[in-house]
Amino acid sequence: HSEYVACLTDPSQIGCHALSRKANTHKGSFGDVAIIGGTRGMAGAGVLAARAALFGGAGRIFLVQPDVELKLDMLHPEIMCRDAAQFEFNQQVVVIGPGLGQDQLAIDLLRAAIQHPYPVVIDADALNLLATKPGLAAQLKTRTAATLLTPHPLEAARLLAFSTEQVQQNRAMAAKELAQRFGSHIILKGAGSLLCDPQDRHYRINSSGNPGLASGGTGDVLAGLCGALLAQGMEVGEAAALACWAHGAAADALVAAGSGPIGLHASELLPVIRSLLNRR
Ligand code: B4P
Ligand code: MG
Image (tube, rainbow, N blue to C red; front, side):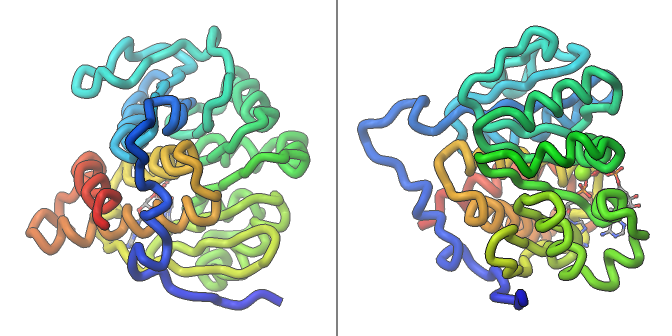
């Protein structure tokens, strides 16, 4: 019998301190993130997720594209662009889905990600694939490393074979059902994103954010940020909570400065999220 635990209102509840850095560290100390997505026509989704991992503090970031559209992110050459057909999984945290597409290569990449013994964030097209491939969904439950699913209400509806209205009418029930059915941590996105844990069945509601976030690409930023926090060693529930809070709080700060809600866009969130993560 799960109950609502707490709103997420400020980072002291969540633990930015988990990210504080010792002097004698190097890029290997802060983890690798592989963003798998950004195929032709949807390159921006992969780029935004990769940039979010960069601004979120990951040590090294790979953008792994199923159909190489970009050799380089000219604005952020720190991001290493790789061809999915030749990519080898090592010890990276994997974020799979933004702009992934749903063809056979996408299915093969999702299967590899599910079998990867390190934390995995599953978003966007990877969620849509999970909804149509019961075999892959079953494999999720066999994972030993952390798994985080980040559906918006329509993706949640597809995963549960509900309507979007049913999800929205009882968001807590939908999030808990997803957590149990897929044995994963869940962020059910939307105004008041809901966070749910597969074990203790508690859920939390994020109180930051505003309709300025209702524009293309903001979800990709959230997914990449989750990957960066996991790569820095945060526990998955805490990483999800901090990512949701910082993502929404960045939008709130932009609105307070007159940069939204109208016209606020995903790229603008990145430096503000970075400032929030560095606030002590
Ligand atoms: P897609 O076409 O799949 O959109 P996407 O590429 O996933 O966009 P993106 O990654 O940028 O945004 P995401 O929603 O992941 O699907 C969009 C379609 O799904 C819509 O046309 C709609 O049909 C359906 N849908 C999506 N959200 C819905 C909702 N809330 N209710 C009903 N239908 C919905 O991530 C967006 C981010 O912004 C999340 O972090 C979210 O929490 C935040 N956000 C968005 N609106 C917010 C608000 N009003 N207040 C606070 N946070 C908000
Ligand atoms: Mg999305």
